[in-house]
Image 1: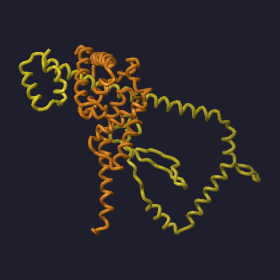
Image 2: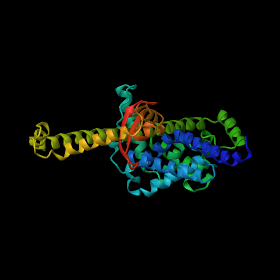
Image 3: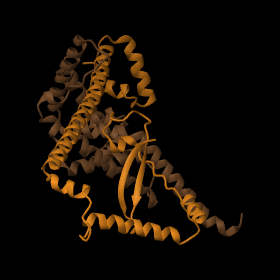
Image 4: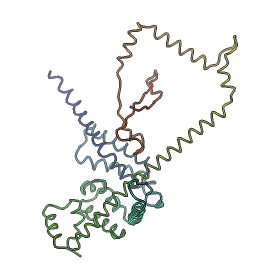
Length: 179
Length: 180
């Protein structure tokens, strides 16, 4: 290999690695992100748009040599802030009538199981409505598989606050749902 | 209230430091309430996860339903449009114009395009032109189907090939998706 090929080869391989990393992250995190955004109250279309914009930002971030540290929470934070900018639809899920949500037909359940499940979801949704915004967001991010430290990064709060908030929120839900 | 009750959720989430987690686990053997609480918190967490899945599925179903209605609406509008177009225009295309009358603009345009194609083929040796066409670089752009369609609308791993017509100015003229 000639010595003058090194400066060209290194950046190309670096870009390829970063591109591959972005692709891996896309496959790993697209569905959890969509799930989080839809549960927050975005429509499926808005959520798709936000996820797309978030991954575009990730691509630009990596291309410009941005830090790869805590990239999962970085991506969730970008998506969270983009969702915040669409504030009009952000709260829709928890002010919409209950019937609009849980109507999925599950073919592996008996009718009795379906009724029980639906009733359980109704109670849970009523309980979620009573939670504070931060409690709700912490719970949904936790349901998306994020660690407390990552949730703290996304919401810009202390990790200890996340622990206390999740604990309080889970206890409230358990109490209201009579579990 | 048990002194460990404030740490049960963190323990479930594996967020406690190892020494604290070990202390709590020893405590669980002697406490009658904490295991019940842990079971309740686990059930709430599982219900919440199921609820989130349900909300996502319901929203994509609504979106798919909306797409179907939008598609049906578009087809209905197209049919209505076709029915509103006077039949005389179709007849005019089908009946050849009498000699001496200028052909319709659409026929002229077709003839013009055909002439241009013939001229271009005459430029080089037909074999060379064919080889040049075969050697054109193919650009493959991978777009996951679930980035284009709502979740669940397309089976996992299903792929499309996009045929893109590029105009003389380099702009995309049309895009057609077909199963890969």
